[in-house]
Length: 156
Image (cartoon, rainbow, N blue to C red; front, side, top):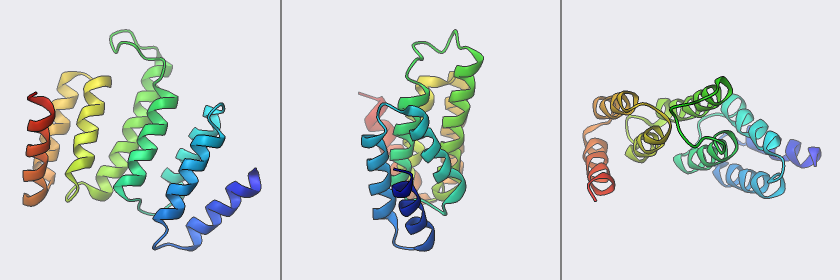
């Protein structure tokens, strides 16, 4: 199993461009093979955050899903969080911030995912600040799409 991890990682690191398919296959393999081992899934997410170059929004969406399902599965309410739960929310937040740093000017869907996630796990003021930051950061085309997506999602 470790040889498979090493092979995927070596392939991803050696092929710096055109490796999105390999990244996606690796994440899907990790999710399926290590489903009963959340610590292994988190190890791979952390590897992606520290050892890979820029990822596409679709790869980030997978990273968000894995992080949230493993780290935040025991959170029912944000009003009574343990320190461990707060730390887990911070870890997922850092993943979103990395994606925003890479794609925040042009990819409104990442901002939308961040706002939706923040609505579940943060105070209203934090979510509002993320929304405001999106409006300041996105280029004009991205801003228009973001506002359309927000209106479609939250005005139903």
